[in-house]
Length: 219
Image 1 (cartoon, rainbow, N blue to C red):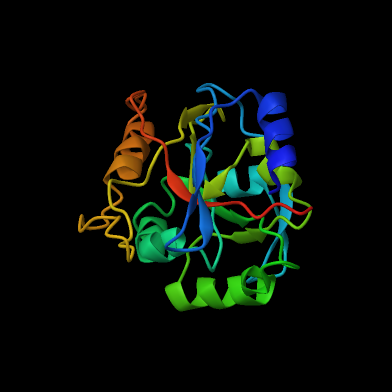
Image 2 (cartoon, helix red, strand yellow; image 1 turned 90 degrees about the vertical axis):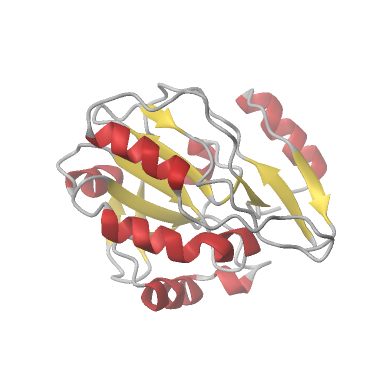
């Protein structure tokens, strides 16, 4: 995303977003926008790269009897996603039928062909995703959700209202500069929020931003 467009987008959405260039990875390191809790999940209909079928928000929600919906913005190439992708696959297994899950990639594949649908499908099959992996070619869904980074998590309750938009957990990938940490990837923050939704409770509102590569917006 170019600076002028990023500024324009931040003004329009009125969200908090922190971004700086990460010289270790050569990518922008971006925090999630922390969209206002209570926001209703925007509708979408996108193609699942594995099945080739069109999948809508309500189709996904129905897979868990509409008890809750987790939307994950992610991609193939981002090192922050690579660091947690196996845990995302485990969450898909552990919460299947309990919380509906959809993953979405919105990156500009002309500039980043490693994130194209063929590579997305290979990633999903390699990891055994139990949830649809959708390609947001126009980037309209990412903009509707105010997605900012990969990974970026949006958890909605049975009423399709946002109850969690924070980090997966405290683990961060190691970088040559010495950044990152050795904390194991457990998904504890997101899992706690999902468990609360399953129990009919409100997740803790004290939530830490997710952090990752910025979504690669089309020029």
